[in-house]
Image (cartoon, rainbow over the protein chains, first blue to last red):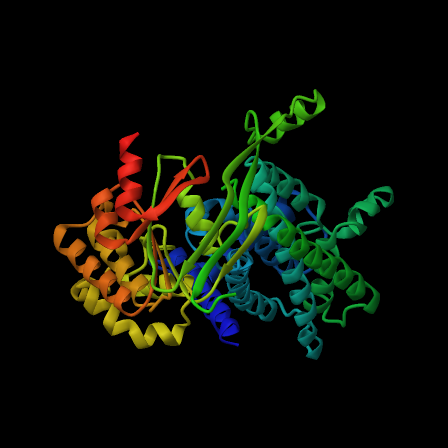
Length: 254
Length: 244
């Protein structure tokens, strides 16, 4: 019992530390979490609606409802791919459940994501996006996104301990992944023969759920919600298992 | 298991599978794998160690660099899992393999006390209860709300030691802790350690400083190439170790 309290306290304190260190020396502090997505939205809206002329109504809402969730995923996985390596000296000093280290990185980013929902709500109101009770369902895709991100983060944190350059390769993969996911553009412009790439992309399914709720103001379709769940849950379980069987081996490599 | 035994190692070995040339880059590894040039050598960091340590014993661990002293402490602390054999440890461990686990330079002394204490296995409530005592012992009351980057290395060491010793541990693992720190603080540490000894804590102490080992320990283990070469009264072991 006291072990559970200890793990909870430790996790909580590591998250607090992450957030504190991040904003310690900046004047605007936590407001950056709110301001950053807004500024990105402005840039993206200008680039994509004026230069590329995508015919999407309410483009700022569309883009914001994609970019903040993608940012959470990409930042978390990127940071966690280095989380074991950069804490090597700590891991060699004391024993604690190492999985906490990765999960705390993801959770502190998740708190940032929750902050970013504030400007999203603000923009939704300004651009008169449909807002109704179905918004409560956002909890599901959010949870799936969290599970999927933890799963990928756990796998990456181990792999990059075996091969340091995994972390760098992953950044390129992320870039390709971002453009292959309908974040800035509508999924409808993807030619049919390439639709398979959308289908195998878990982030695409989660974003679809999110947009149905936030952008269209409807309930997410049951079957797509189920697909998101299966994808994210399997990656989560696989990640935990992969971490478990490798964590003792990578200790010697740190 | 005998009531008094707090640490027991049974045929413990730690085998590293080392690539002859370590290839930290994926590309290199792939190339070598394809050309079948990945060869491994087995390397025993710790080999076939049997050890029983009773409650209240204080034992020094000596040996050359790379003999496996720190690795042995890490196995007892649970940081490394041995590849063969079994490890039994009973009670709360204070691993001062190095002081100040998880200290962050941007955070204040106070914030670091909490992080460090949690990493050493205390709950938040326990740390709150001991907070005043920790600050008192460290003698850093006036600086406790300043970021750690403004501290000197001696001050950081003091903070680390103060947190670690507030744990009331059953087993204490020390690794070259007195390499830094001034004479006054060293004195304070020795006093604290002696107090722990009176309370029945068990000590394992790795050092190259034979005088420090003689001061704290009753017996000593001499490690060589991962094996126990000698385990005897402290004077005996040290004499033999120095005579070669």
